[in-house]
Image (cartoon, rainbow, N blue to C red; front, side, top):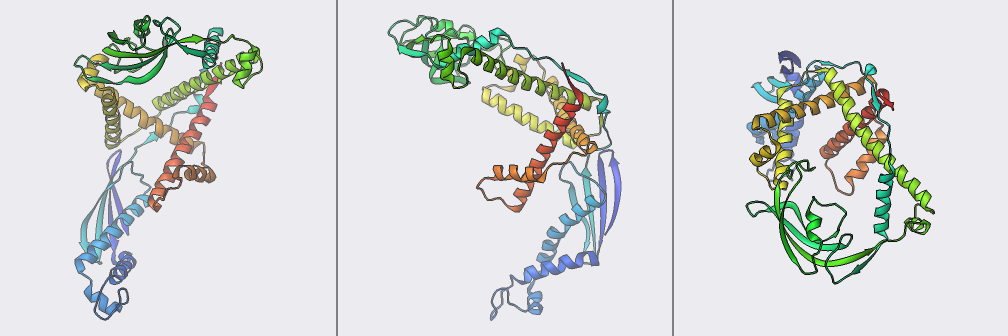
Length: 424
């Protein structure tokens, strides 16, 4: 098998594979045997027809098609492996010449990563900010503990601040359409907790059991879900019941009820440690993203347009699903986000590039540091994910490849962070 290559672009290569009769012989014989086993002739059981008779019954066109569908993908894979080309997407493979079992020419067009120049990561440096926990944060959790062990008594009076009310509510947009995610049945809301948008709980102070309320509120401009930011919603609310909340005293007895401490002092210390650990995890996640972004920015990676388009299509799909769940049209979302369609597309394209480049530099870092994934870890994760379901050999191989890639990325990220990050 002779292979010639032509680099049509820094990230695209065309391979021409010339296959001789001797290269095809073994596969031809195997395919003939498979087809012969299916031949049916009077007087013979299926699979027991003599080879010389079965060969006469095999349709030539069926033989050619079966041979090519079996041989060509294997030959293409072997050619790419031989030339060290790793396509980022399934290559375009075509048969350009076939004289049955004499000569065969295969053309392979493959998009791949171009030149990769990994920046000197040993010169990168980031400092983890010191994690601080305030008394107010500890006290906020302590108040939640009190609520967990509070006594709730239904009362027949208007709801007051600090009462708990049980609600059915639903939000509607300006056209009277239900807003996704803005509805619930028999929802327990503690008045004064400020868990809902500003103004919502205020509207319920003074409400009584069985009362129906309708009011309009505008979501804050800095609301976490961008689709809802600055949006006016009309709420329809039914008050199912009102409960008086009796909070227990904050003391050693309450602390002991939690099961994690014997005294109030121990409970405070436990809460402080939990908050510290949560903040540290969040800070490390932010820093890891910053480190990868910095390494990607300083590195040079040639990425094929086809891969960028694939990632961009993925992002567009994710955004379309987000808009559907939020009950928004793209045009309305762009208006609320103060973006033009062109700016939105450019942002998505930059995100696609960042995702791809970040993944590439992490893999290159893993290669430079000779990071290997423990096969036992792959098998353990595979057993957990595959569960009781039966997987085909290809499905099993694909799942293991995904697991290996995920574990490799995680290990590379952990090691890179350890090398670069200094504790503040």
